Length: 283
Image (tube, rainbow, N blue to C red; front, side):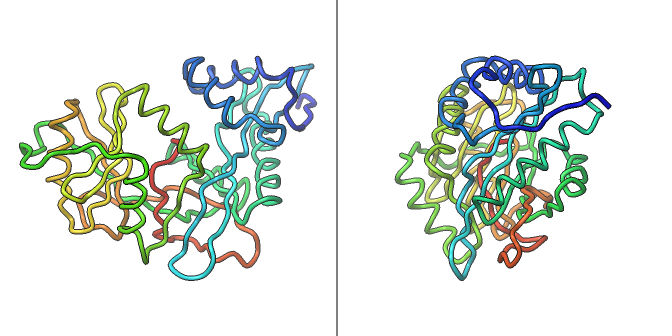
């Protein structure tokens, strides 16, 4: 195997970080620059260097704060966007970068969290770091003709109002709250691609548009009227299909699946299989 070195990123790596990200995820320059402006601090990225350049990179962000039903809140560091040059894959380089990120994350937080991009990656992260699922999500997908006509209205609400209502709905349940920087990036995504924060007769939802798909990435309907909320959103956002996520403790259709994983410090209150509601997140 070719020699490589794991190290913190340096300023001269920035153009290479942009290239690695674009090759791995296909995002445009404006989005990546927004991410860099919010998060690319001296301790925010670890790279693998080979033949004089970064060939793999991953980011360690200050993650959401976890609020268990009882006890004190827990801090997280979020490992994000592992990208390896295609010419250097399958050599253990990405795994080495990820392990270094987890070590760095656990030096500054109670839990090192990651959201796998696809189902097969859950096994990879578990093997690489001992991560276990700590958050679950109920998820359903609907075609437009499966959604009833709207009999309610989706009304836009402010960030402040959304968070007050969210806190009230989630009181007594395990849930997370985004940092200001994480929410700033989420808001930027919503503004660029369409969507917003909405109330439907007291139920609340975060809506993002993703091409032909309308993603309701957080739907909090404690009385279980999913379809009424979905009808109101579909009236406002015509799309080919609708992906809907909500907590396990809110009634509704769809199948439960693991969501966020975490490696935790010894003695942490987090445990595998938790129905901790992560809410809207990078994925």
